[in-house]
Length: 180
Image (cartoon, rainbow, N blue to C red; front, side, top):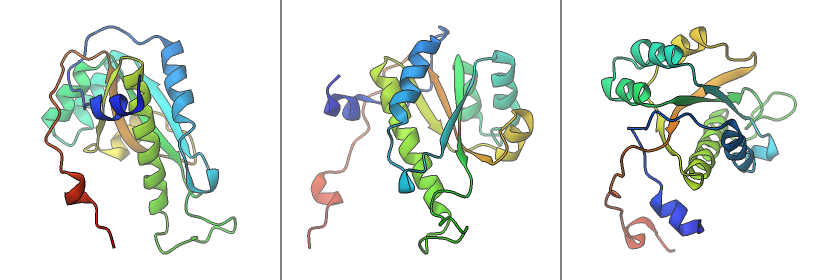
């Protein structure tokens, strides 16, 4: 797939086919996402694949803060990925102090880069994704064993698309770019 086709063609998918995802494909997606840039090459992103439909439904019913749209999206997906980050590395010096005034916010910046790379790689493999932002991190973390030293950054629904959304209107480069 051509780079611009991938960037311009990827959409947030909220309805999926029931087909499972081959683990070899998931390995390729994560391997590609592992090349995402990160603060001082800390590579803090980790991926937990949840395929168990009972677990997905539990998270959908109990951990989406009552946001039915996200609950329905999860129930539609054959799998979800919990993108976690290793705490205390991105944005920090070896002594534990912050490298910049942004403090630990670099962790979420790195998680966002990794999530975008993951979703673009999934799209390249013929899969659809949507990054969900409304969820109860504590409830998910108490239900799914998040490894020590890691924190849940986002939930990504993934599967073969059962919809083809149109591209939303985009701002022009003139609206987005200031040249000084």
